[in-house]
Length: 115
Image (cartoon, rainbow, N blue to C red; front, side):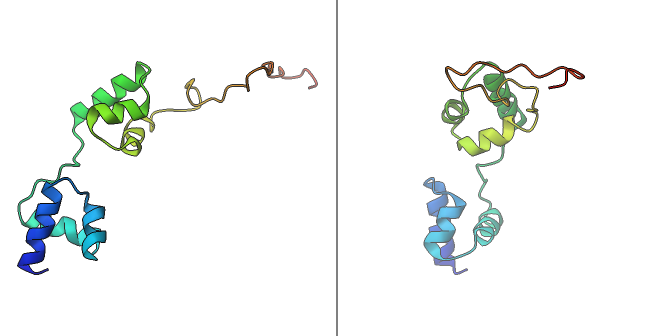
C-alpha cells in the first residue's frame, strides 16, 4: 500500500466509513485495510466492551427491540442480535412462535393420550 493510499484509508476510516466500505472503494481486501490501520496506530472502533454487552443484554431483557438497542449504542442491529441472542433458547418467549391472530391455540397432547 502506498503512503498516499494509506492516508486516504486512514482519513476514510476516521470519517466514519466501515472497513468493508473502504476496501470496496479502494479495491483492496478488508483484512488489508484492518492490518494497515492497526500498523498505523489507529484504534479500531468496533471493539465491543463488556459494559456495552451488559447494557445491550439488560435492555433486551427489559423488552427493548434490537433495532432500538442498536440505535442507542451506535451499532448495527446484527451486532446487537449476536450479543444478546446466543443465550436465547427455545424456552424463551421470544424464541417461540405465536399462533396466527384468530387461530385457537393448540394444546400439546399428553403422553399416552393416543393423539
